[in-house]
Length: 140
Ligand SMILES: [Zn+2]
Image 1 (cartoon, rainbow, N blue to C red):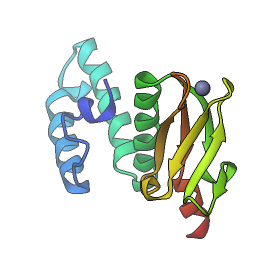
Image 2 (cartoon, helix red, strand yellow):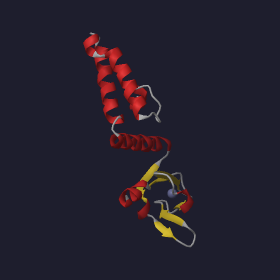
Image 3 (tube, protein in one colour):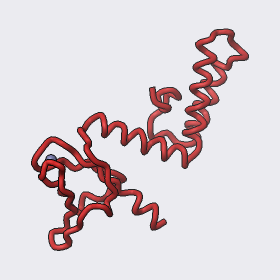
């Protein structure tokens, strides 16, 4: 279960939704109000989830990790690189990286508008995970 499931909220929940949902759940299962061991563990889970999701920076890191984990479950990712580590071919407006099979990962500039992107090799089933947001982080 991820933190959103634990708090029974959607991934796009606002700060106030997170807070009120935490309050609601914490009230119903607070260990002082119940002797059940299950409730105590649930309370710890809820507190942990709330501590992360109520902190914008921690929530962002958590979301990033969750997204990345999902990508690793969906694809056979052989490498993880920063966008700037790829070769840029200005003429064609593409980023290129050579796969270990000898094939190529080709990423068009237009696709570079998300924090990370999976690029499939043009010759085998391996995938390259390109991290894009780091560049923006540095600029900010
Ligand atoms: Zn390949």
